[in-house]
Structures are given as structure tokens and as C-alpha cells.
Length: 197
Image (cartoon, rainbow, N blue to C red; front, side, top):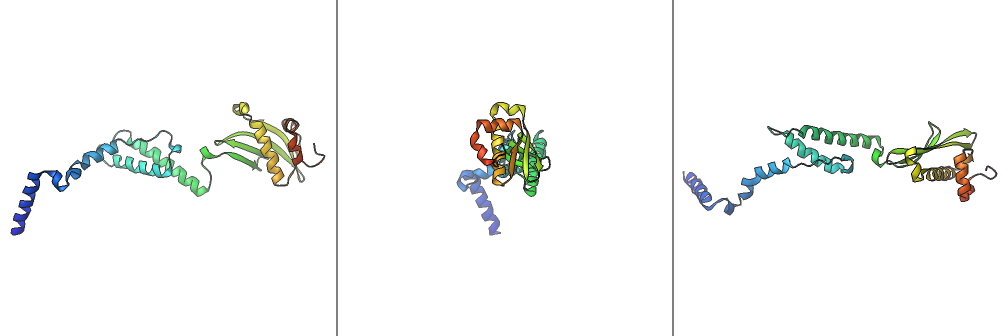
């Protein structure tokens, strides 16, 4: 009985003194502040530039928007885009491949018998070869026309010569472009077997 009078007394005292005295200001404003924050979920257009951690945070925020009685019209589309990007990254991690946007480099594609040079996930050029015993015969250098002004060809041929030298593979340059490169940069002749050029 005295307890109920104590509760009534404390509630009357809290109402008369206002919410600020007991630290209830933040509680009273919390739903409006939370709603305002989740309304402003800004999903960047280029999701590849966003870290995986940030993608997960954004997807959680957009999911909270979807969990409302009246979600914004584009919330479902934004959520699907975020989830697709997260799933794509998870699949890449499981497969052990590099992201397409970050793939740059050089490789020997033995399936197609060619050395390939990549930049930002795009093959900029390749050098075809044929195997004659233990020798690699370079037959044709091809550069994507979009990259001809960037001097991809010298970088490609340089990578081919350095890679074959590192693996101790004898190279025979029958391709006119490779021969022109060797004429322009004679220091790379040292990487060829003696008497092969």
C-alpha cells in the first residue's frame, strides 16, 4: 500500500520536474532520431569501392527500413543490390579468386597457348606461342585497340621475356612485333638463348 503511494509520488515528482532532470530527454527523442537516421541511408552507386564491412552495415540499415510498416519505395532495390554484392564477394573468397576490378597482371594461359596482360580486369593484350620441344616460339603479339596509345605492347613483351627467363624456358621470337621490340631494346637479347635471334 505504501509502495503504491511512493510510486505515485515519484511519478508526480518526475512530471513536475520535467524529463531533463532524470535523464529521460534522450529516451523521449530516441524514436524520432532513429527514424531520421535510417531514412538517410545513403547507398553509394559504386559498391565495388565500398569495404565489405561497410556493405554489411549498409545492408543492416536498409533491412531496418524494410522492416517497417511503410518502407520507402526504393528500399527493397537498394537492399537487393547490397546483398548481391556481398554474396558476390563471398563467392570470390570461397573460390580464392581476386576481384575483377582489382585483377591486374600477367599470366601464361596454357589452355590457349598465350601470355596475357591485364589491367583493371581487362585483357589489354596477349602474345601467342607454340611449343617446339623445349622451346617457346612467339608467333603473334596482339594488343587491344583501346590500349594501343598506352604503350601496352612493350610492357607485354617485356613481361613475356622476363617470365620465360625466370622459368628457364628458351624463347624463339618469330613474331615481327617481338623482333621490333628486341631491336629497340637490345638489352633483352641477353634473355634469349645464344644464336636464336
